[in-house]
Image 1: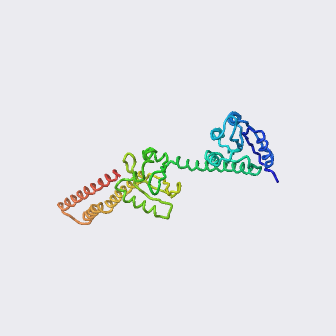
Image 2: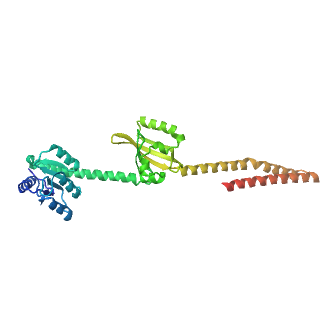
Image 3: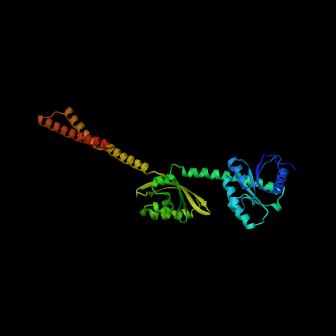
Length: 333
């Protein structure tokens, strides 16, 4: 059988010389050149791991050492192992304790009487691989957690059935003014104005009964100060501990909508000015043009001439008033 050519560094914490020799033989049978380190008691193991900072791939731990044993030994080794996989080797077949050992964080639990080269080798490989996958999973979860917590926009997760907040990011805490503890004691109803609750309940009903996972819409939200904001919401359905939940991204568009409303009001005023220019201004201009035509093309008595000049003055004053009104409206815009 071809031996495993990978370089393994293994710490064996074992006080029995015969058991240690047997473990060495098993490892040499399966691995080409393993580096094996021995500690004969807990203190020696602690010295290697803590003081000398020995880097190993796996720890093989005898459960009965001269200076420490049992659950206390497991917890102490886990505390100083820096995440190195630990395989417990024992001569006592206690099923309940083996289950408890695994729950404490041990990678595997092997009986010395049933130990063989192949099952020890497999346990080491599986323990190292599980640790690797666990580290990758932790890193992945950390990346997603950072995306959530470090998002510059408010985000939260809520239970779709109870509507309870399950988690909120720092941006939501800053923007809405509630503390994390306050958020987690609230439901998403609590950030909606009372007058909007009927519409809100209808949207919740649709979300619970919809096959679509994505939602996009605009709703009014209430901050802790009582200020009402316009929130653009994007959410997706997720499952947490088997329960339906939604992760929500919020974009406060209150200022944007106010700006749009201001532009619309401005456009309305500009339309009014355009109407004044196209309709109201034409009347006095048309009269002036008519009077000029009368003066230019017809003979008039002195009284008629004066009367026409008076009409010119009246129309000019009317036109001046209209121009001033247009100027005032333009200044306000």
